[in-house]
Amino acid sequence: MDILNAADHRPYPLPSKRWIMRQVWNNVLFLHWPVPPERLRPFIPSALEIDMYERTAWIGIVAFQMKGIYFRGLQSISVVPPFAEMNVRTYVTNNGKPGVFFMTLDVNDWASLNIAKRWYRLPYSPAAITILKSGETFYYKNNRKRSSAEFYGNCTPVPGEYFPEEGTLDHWLTERYCFYTTDNKYNIYCGEIHHLPWPLQKAEITIDRNTLFSQFHLDLSHLQPIANYSKGVESFMWNCKKLQL
Image: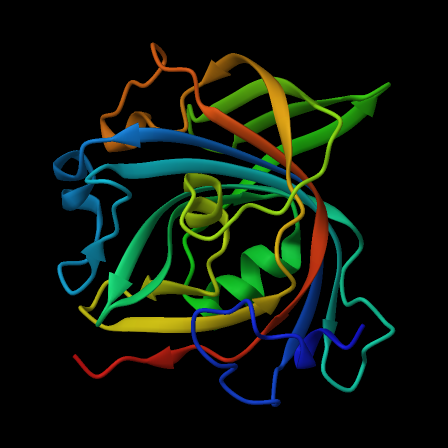
């Protein structure tokens, strides 16, 4: 399938055909917790509105294996070997356009840490991350370097793949086609993303330790997250653009 010609599922049109990067995300774990929006507000740029589902904001942990990063013109050669990433994110809007706001991104790949961090102005941190599979279960270990932030847990996907219907919480949490970021100088940027709809499975999750929310003064250990697994998608990305606020 020509992914770039499959855009009917998007909430807004593709920005152009001039994408700059293709990425392949495999074995994606989505974990989401409800949180009062006022608890997130201090950590979100004032120019962005916190997006809510039925008056509730959500914070998520997304972990995945990056199979490859391919620049336009070098579409068959990945510029990096496979690596693992784990991010903390929430959901925002700008002028009604929904997107992701990354609060932290942990990665064990040099190129992402040193190149993409500057290119996309994303808050990457170096970390020792492993995602291992044994039988049908995936095991996650994340130790952010020079920090006490950690995540240890495992997930077992439940058989039965589905595509969430528009209007459902699963659809709202996963079907996002841009992200917003800041350079900490009151400038806001938007990066466009495109992929086919997420094929999801429910997941059974065990969390042994999670301190990724500590810097945001959140303790959600008493709540069981919504857990979804996806075998992954192939995605396309465009240059970030500075928003005129």
